[in-house]
Image (cartoon, rainbow, N blue to C red):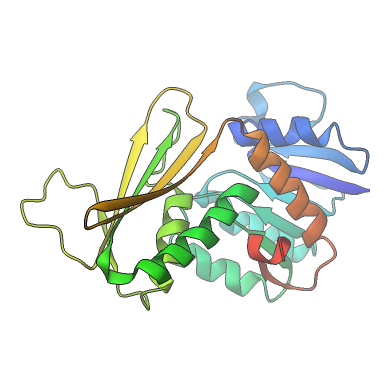
Length: 251
């Protein structure tokens, strides 16, 4: 039985994950952590901070905010608890902290838990390798109007995966409304759209001479990400210390 704590319980992903856990025979939702814990009452124990939780759990699933990372890592290391992290908007300093903490506990991190997105990553890498410098590359991502970070963590994942095929020599251009110069050949354009209830759409355009190739993925429900997070939880709880991602899960 996996005893799970969800950090970011009242967030959109926290709610979907928590509801899905309740349908699983081999999982138990022990508690929820959220800064708004005192504002609500529900059928489980709620805490404002992970440090307030004194119970026992095998794993913490975190879909919260980058500002929560330090306390989360401190608690997990002190209690030898595995982590599944899907929080986005991390910067280099946060990733460095993950790498350091992963020397002491098993951590699974992915900006997107969807199997389909991770297949897309393989496809765009192959396309970039085959098409090379002859094609301009643009990434367009669309999300709901409540998403606070832009571009999405997944858009960065896609751009980074493509850039690996060019020895990381490409530069990222975010939007073009202030640009007055011609597009350079070493760019990857990244564009964000926010509106309505769009769950998540990512499109990668390879535009060449007289032909265009477009690879895209659309999520119609947050359940695809929640399912991936629970699969990651089952995967990481038996692993040795280290930093894991979706590539490790789908091998």
